[in-house]
Length: 410
Image (cartoon, rainbow, N blue to C red; front, side, top):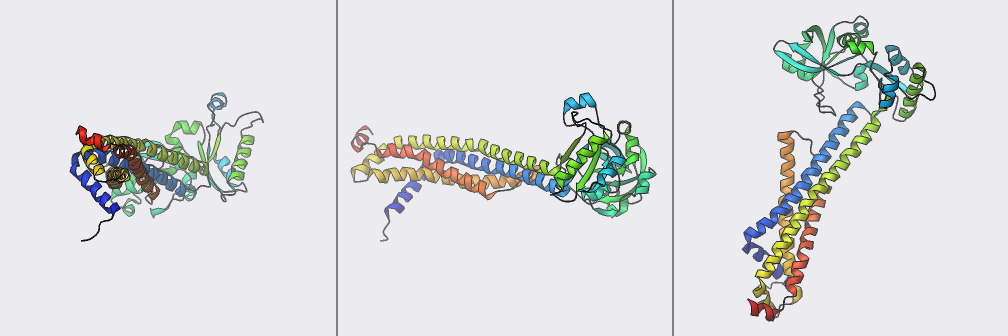
């Protein structure tokens, strides 16, 4: 007959014991399953969101600088109003030593686009041809309008890929066709490559880009207040800070600001936005994981309660085992093994639930998810610790039961 080691015997007894009380074991396992699954799913959503933000910002380039005619300080806005920017300012900024190129742009605004049966609200932007190079946007068909179109206010438009596909069936079919923006006709000269959704969730493929002057005429407020936005690109990441300082110095002189006046404009770069967005997403991931970990604690309390009930119900068994020579250590190890096995089963179930939930969230809800191995390891590690911690007291209590009293009372 094959000899069974004490450790293997205790493990087999633990498996048999939790198998006898299946319903009770299942209830304890569910608590751990929900805890581990929640931790993995929440961290996956947070990590996926952070990766999506990083990817979106990387497409724009971290050496991109945004110059707005709106001051960052609300008190300055009330006191001094908007800065008045112009095409001349964009050309002067482009001539700065640390700047590679700069382009004037309107803010994005909604417009009704109609083309045949297509009738949708899209985002409309007015700018100059260098806008596409600064944004690093490429074309599926056609090309950008040229400088003459800007100078002569020609009604030409570059549209996003989703507009071309829905309105005309293909990017090539859209070229030279007439579309209407707020009932004004425009000729399609280019179709952009797909870009997905932006950082704010808007569809970047549902966009219409016009020559600057034409777009300003469609927005009377934009004409009165000058150009609201200038996009500039530094020559390198190292030149980013000198470029921003050069732009600030130029605009302060241009706006006739004294040394004591606050800037009535704002100069921002995407590098700081990248860091802020990444830090925020990382904090969110940790916060979601910490909140989900509460479920693990609750699951651990459930295991402890069930193990305490089990100790009470099995006093007779414990008394018999002690009376025939069973040691306190063996009884303590067996009950501890039962708690750890319950937590392990819950950890495996939670792992499957978390991965399955992340896949479902990505497939059906469209949430960006990313399963981090560290979150899996941490969740399973916490589950194991919860199992040990919740089993120590019941196991110790079982080991201290007096065999004589156990046999007498039950």
